[in-house]
Image 1: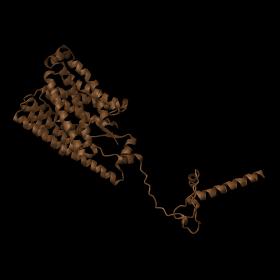
Image 2: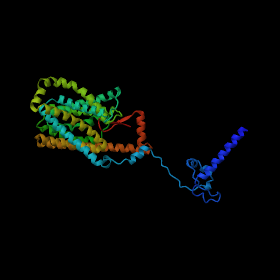
Image 3: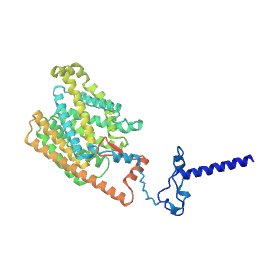
Image 4: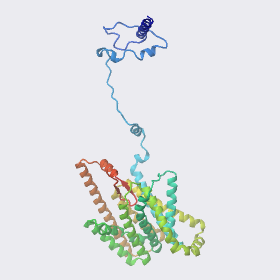
Length: 437
């Protein structure tokens, strides 16, 4: 009996709660005038009204015909990152890309011209190219270490496998860098850059005979003016000497093999980190030659003569600035390539050489013969023609690969993911820059 009493009491309590819900809840719109339900009175129940109303008249308990018509809501699911990205206002780099690219080109030219002029001025009172080349790399490595310490960029990890891949590239980079500076110290800057205009010829020769890849006839024909122009300029160059000429040619060969080895050293590391590691390895490679060839002379009278001529403060400042300009202009050259097409970068590289030759003649007052001027012009025109034809050929190859991918339903992203998964990477046009996928 006590159990029955408890059950009856519980039922009464539930009935009372339901009557309380009817009195407390306001009728939904559209139900007050329904003939099927009696009119309801709204009664305010303190404290319990909202609680009771929260579970009253659920749609599942009412006939569909009695429910008020509600407009359908369309919910678009959007990732939070994408929504935040859309809400983020466009920055200066996004609003004015052409202006930013122009600034990159300007800084690339400016730093390169300043480097060549300051470098030659140092050699006029401190003719020790091995040591100066070492200083270039020391300042660059210190710059990289400071950048890594502040996370701009974040240092990429390296292992023994990557070191083995990068060492031949760094070795050729160090040899080309040192021999270039020996040439700059021995002859006029304008003549050294005229000889270095032959670098595309050595690149084509190595591609054809070392890598075994066919070079189109149009590229070979475009190199003929380069060879003829350099020959004309060399025959009548007033500052000509064999030390400068031979070292400039060795520099061309070294940078050609650097390009070959960089194609084999495929890594997914970004260009800034790759160039930093190459600079560190090159620095280690350049220390022994500097100590062997110039160490005794520097200790005897090299440093003392330079300090006597310009003072200690100017001497140290010049060495620091020339090293900083060297590293920055090389890094900006790679960054500029990332922003423009290879054809634009090739033309810009040719114009950069024209600027360097022109400004060096003006600053140092170098006298050149008419034949040297004509030969230099022909050589630069040949380099421009070669760069244009090569860039067009590369562009046609990329279009063909893209059309084949679209034809067989292979997207660029899927190719990249498959290549990355398989561990295959490809180098870009920049020697130091390699990207994966």
